[in-house]
Length: 363
Image 1 (spheres, rainbow, N blue to C red):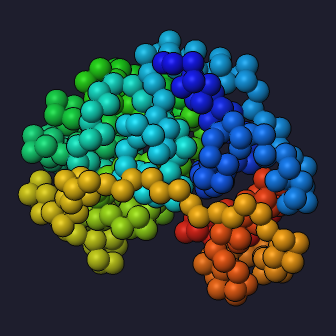
Image 2 (cartoon, rainbow, N blue to C red; image 1 turned 180 degrees about the vertical axis):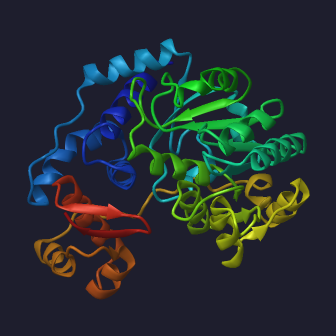
């Protein structure tokens, strides 16, 4: 890597690892200032405009140690809007600013389907998932899952020979669950491991919803094999629907609680799946996402500054209840770029929280 490329990557990671700078804020900072180095310099002033204390920027020494750890693992970074970063994932508003990947990166250029389900899956569902994913991989689809117990493990095991991607909640060097260490190592050799967290980070409960958005965002569609109501698998399916991707489910017995989530999805309009051909037929209309040139990452529209009156107009509309940004734009009658600028300043000042579905509230 050239010195300029190395410095650019360090600056990007310093932004990404700074508390209070999430995916949306990162994208807006890069769009407004043109480079991560310029954005780093501007963060303290923007936070003061938002009426709060500037965040403590991630230290360069800490980031350099992280980069060295990634290199020791034989992994690499992919930054949103640059290089090999998967364009389907770049389309979502909360696309991770950086991914850490290890394995066959070329799998990201192929059509992907997510297969998720219960950790305490039935023996029949595990067998079905393994056979189905083997057939999907044989037909050219890359199977994406989360390396969890049960259906995830079966999905990776069935597809490992043809192409599978494991999305990890913690760091690439953390084996979770521990019994999947051999599988995780195998995927790193024959498939692809993807992580958002830096090496050494143990997975915590808050990390799994972030992992789920990557699984759904990478894929043309999400198939749920077994899932109880309110399970993480249903969160992944909901995210897939929000992203405009296909949602599919395998029906099950109404007497088995592990099938209730899938049956509910089908009742709400998900495609019923009984074999690999059903998945391929369901994804057919979405094939153009891979076959055609993709627009990928699009920088957000943001203004260079906002006046005091414009800040007051946006602040007056904000409260503790999450409100869609589009509604703030409509009610304030301000240009979208101005509203986004005010929200950016408030977030950097620690006064704004972002929620799913493009909603915001006062912290």
